[in-house]
Length: 173
Image (tube, rainbow, N blue to C red; front, side, top):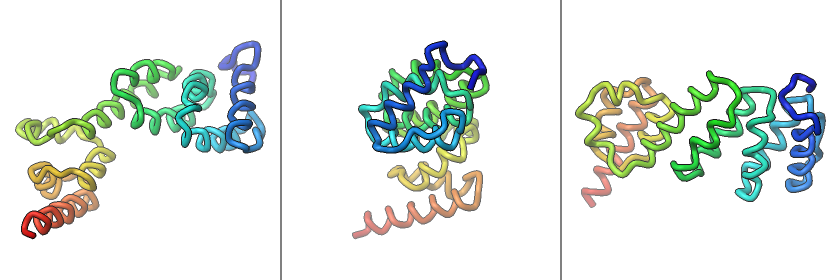
């Protein structure tokens, strides 16, 4: 792991040791992304580890692993804190992906998406992830109808249609 991504003091190794202590797992090999991910995944379940995970994103040498740490955190952070976390990513491509994901999370959290449906381009720009999540959880019939008709995949269209039917049954009772 001498690729310049960790500081001279071995901060990543220190963080891994601390996460191992907090999670009760063995630290494993700091040069092995699977060992690192195992610790990160266990640490994600506890908000008190977020300070260390924030640092990990900067020091993590594998951009896919860094993104895998960041994405579930973005879903749990207040919107105002997300830019600071995204800035921790060292790779431009990863930051761009994280910004799109953060936008999707914000849309998922928004109070009402029905007004956005007037702009066809907006729904077309929704990621598959966002469309699936909305199809599974939205309580807005207009959103579900649109996804049932024009969702990007058969799976999305099916989820939305079933959810809309379930909401219709509840409303009829």
